[in-house]
Amino acid sequence: MVYFAMAMALFGEDDYEEIIVRLTGTLRGWGSWGEAWEVPTRGGITQARQRLGHEPLRELFAQVAVPAADAGTEGAFLGPWRLMTIDGFGWDVLDAKENAAEFGYAGTGGDAESGAGFPKAGVVTISECASHAEVAAVIGPVTSKGSGEQSLLGRCIRGWKRTGC
Image (cartoon, rainbow, N blue to C red):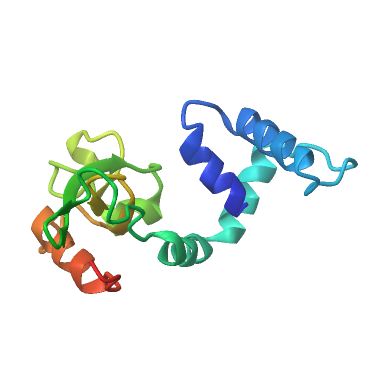
């Protein structure tokens, strides 16, 4: 399911079944998947994603989210300083009670009664300019005190493991 979560990011326009078929085809080609395995239903995929939770993906990101450019990469450095960028954006999340409680509804004072379609998560990332490699990210609510992009950025910077940048 970790591979599936990564494949969803690569093939965001495809539905679950298309993504799992692409993924299993690739893994079979690499000799990493049993031939007898059958593609699960949409409901089976959803249940497996829920069982996985977010912790394995958080740990994977922490292990691989590092600058990718070296000293020879054009546009990666200004003198001795690695060039980084900060980005903030909102992201619609599934309209579920848990998500509404965690993130709130943007522009509505936090509740769905005001007409917002989906709860919205606020996201702030720090990325390397030359490679566009994301090195830190924070996801948080959009409606509570301290939920603006500047507050999320503060959390992002404090949580960022120094990588020698």
